[in-house]
Amino acid sequence: MELRGALIGCGFFAANHLHAWQDIPGARIVALCDRDPARLADYGDKFGIQSRYTDAADLFVREKLDFVDIATTAGTHRLLVEMAAQHRVPTICQKPFAPSMEDAEAMVRACEAAGIPLMVHENFRWQTPIQAVADVIRSGRIGKPFFARVSFRSAYDVFSGQPYLAEGERFIIEDLGIHILDVARFLLGDASRITARTQRVNPAIRGEDVATMLLDHASGATSVVDCSYATRLATEPFPETLVEVDGSDGSIRLGQGYQMVVTSPQGVETTDVAPALLPWATRPWHNIQESVLAIQNHWIECLRQRQEPTTSGHDNLKTFALVEAAYRSAGTGQTIDLTNG
Image 1 (cartoon, rainbow, N blue to C red):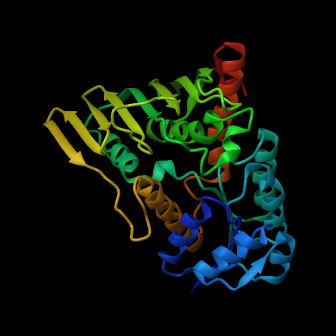
Image 2: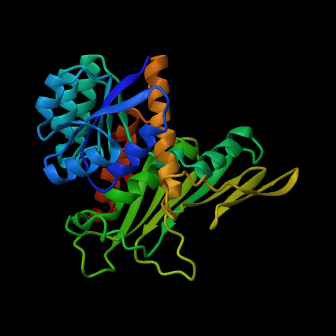
């Protein structure tokens, strides 16, 4: 049975959502919603979607939906998620999940009360290279992990496609660091404490463009999570996340060019874990674009199996808490204990 969905938000990243939906058997976007009629017409024509709305309330009243994909900016998420909950429509919501923890918790409660699943479109952990690192850890080949570094350092101009990123008081932790913190959680488990330092190197933006975070994990492991949009390298790595994991019996190194080196008692093995270049994808974005397809596939599978998504609203509250704690730590210079709220 085909699952009918609607996409709310026809901005910069929405094309990736729509391309991925076209590649998923048994799921179809039947309606679009955006406040900008020009963008609505552009995406509607390009993807052959005839039902178009400039008012989300009208969309929910008129369309019979199995799910809604919310790809708007964070400030609109609570209103739209609560609207979806009111109509009992299962919901995917883009990150950042919300402007505040209060809003994030309210959205989770609303969907829980309505009895509908809520998934956050936290796609970095679904990237092929990150999944490959997780597979090695789960296999036990390097023993018990005790240290990791998850790093995203680049000088890529993200502001040309998303100019609003230069305008907010918060930038890199909220927009990018949330992904990298989630990867650290995915690989090593939940964190109990975080210490963060931030810098603003680019004078043309308002928020921070460099962040370095130290995490203590409940497992006993330590991780360093570092992000930068001010780092100029001989080879631009955007949008690659580089990972180092040290375990009691070996190590993993995910380096530039999607090369993963695993050192274990069995020897040293180098594997190419590059993502597939989908027909609609473009380099260097293909890594992220493939992960969009993977997470949306996961959502449809969860809907069909009536299972909770891996990046559920409940799960993402833990990543969101790390973001908020990182800003508190950077502002106060103190380590934040996450076990005490």
